[in-house]
Image 1 (cartoon, rainbow, N blue to C red):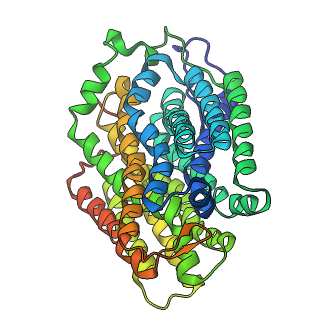
Image 2: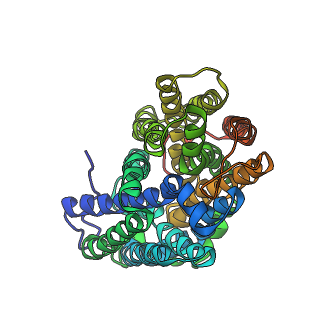
Length: 427
């Protein structure tokens, strides 16, 4: 059960139910961001045809979301520490909805890229907003649990952005489907503006002790454990964003001779595993007051899962679904990287610390999506269907080799992570 902080020293503390609903709206914004993140995976053929692009350019188009999202995380964190989540999350949701409208109206690659940049920049405030709201209003020993639940809702968005959105795209076309996403983003902006609350400036949590605006950035950047946490999160999330977020659906279509909607449904099992694992890793880690062992176990499962999904011969679809579920479950241990980073830095730098880590986490998509697309283009044998490039199974397997290697790198990082005992940072 979520329990909000309610102390006599904090003036004008809102009711716990209102704070819980506010956190839920922030988490729903992250769900929406995840739908936007993976949406191109069910539009690959349509976007290749309508914009006349190959794998590398399509990877870049999809990755514009990540460029804006990851590149803005540090300033997002600084802004969160300075202004609080209410105004920022509201404006950001509106910007993401407006970006969807731009993407719908695009008749060329450049305008579509502008739309994806707007969506990415708006969505950049989603997960940090949920984490910041949790840090602002809820007890420290609930932080990893709330982070896990936020990840679960986000990954529910990943599931919605696969099979359900795939069916919608096939039924009404990709432009009308994205227009629906625009409407949802604008409605969410209205709701967050009405419900979210910031700490009063007189409250201790918001005062920052007279520190300068960029002091939190300097402190976080000088803390080695923050960078280790960021590296682990990046390694765990990269395969999910590259495979589940873009290239997994066309791979399954090719390897298993399935139509788009069924392939999307199969790939979405990865997000089911992620959605189950994220809150579970958080609850177990908080209960046992341990971070590093759970990170290492999750990293091993993630490495084995993505390697098995691509390279085990003769898999049937049921076995593939099970392996993808394991991969998603293991990768979701990345949620603990936020707790590690926060527990190694003071509370007054929480926003920028979480921004740095989340920038690396989402930045993995900005790197791996176009990299896989470039590798696929290198292995392309010249086959075209309705103007879209078709890649062979061998091309996919060669391009996907980078994914288990990245996960294995995350396992190595856990050897250097300092155990915090789930205790808040003390000066």
